[in-house]
Length: 405
Image (tube, rainbow, N blue to C red; front, side, top):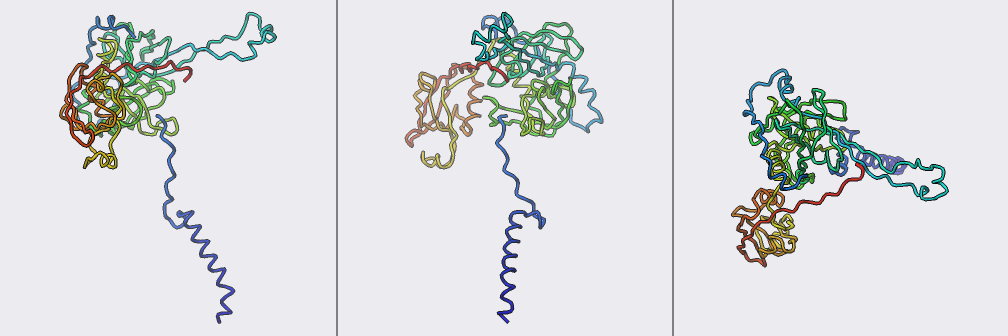
């Protein structure tokens, strides 16, 4: 009997093994979902002080608190209230074109004579902006007008004019322009501390240069940071479609008041995938006032490089919990250096407040006026120490002129 079954046993075993291999490779054959694919890497995503100090802070219009009730069937009234204040921004700059090596040869140059190809070319970019005061101040993104030689602003009513750059703040990606026109439409700014997840949001801008467009969604989240977009991040997240050309445009609520300045999207394809980010109106208002009245944004500064503390590092420093941040570097002759801080110190508290997140701590310090003295609690060599630091003014970051983006 065994001899009769033996010739059939090996094919059966081989068939079972092949079936196991196929089912592991293709689980959907038996109805199991396939494991999700490994996602690709996330795409990354001025005037003088004397001139600025002579200007008064612009008067912006404060919107009434949002009334939350049954949603309307149409948001046409909100759009009509906000859209006229949203402008298209066209910025151009001249860049030098690299000369072909053959043009340095006299033999080839003789064929062109005096009509040599120009070494300059014009680059243009497209974005949006928002008129926020009767004085003609326009808020937009820094990256929209970065390096521009000429900026043109087009209103929805057909008027066009050249804009003056009042100031830019690369670290928040905001810029302030000014236009000189009469009877300007002005948007109202809402208090973004009252913005709630789930509020209806409308994004208004000029995506892909097709003309002013309105998209609708909700507020998906607030206080978004750690995105690697700006030095200081406190974004409002929305699923209202935001595309190239929307940058600098308005994110408004259901009553047409400005909630934020659209600035970035999370995308693997370059188009909207339902995750967009806007700079809150409260932050934009503060930057607006600083740039208009001072010509720059003044921030407090410690002069340190901070590193997040995890459980393993906390144990190596003799800490029971990963609270605080490691001082990885100290700027020579900076505020921290003069206060006696050293690389390797663990910063536990600033002004009596526990330090949990390096980015949040640096943002909080930036909001404190330079010259302010703050008590610090650190750990050095396993011992707690108390120090006092006098904050300095954060140096203005040096940004190089882009050559072709």
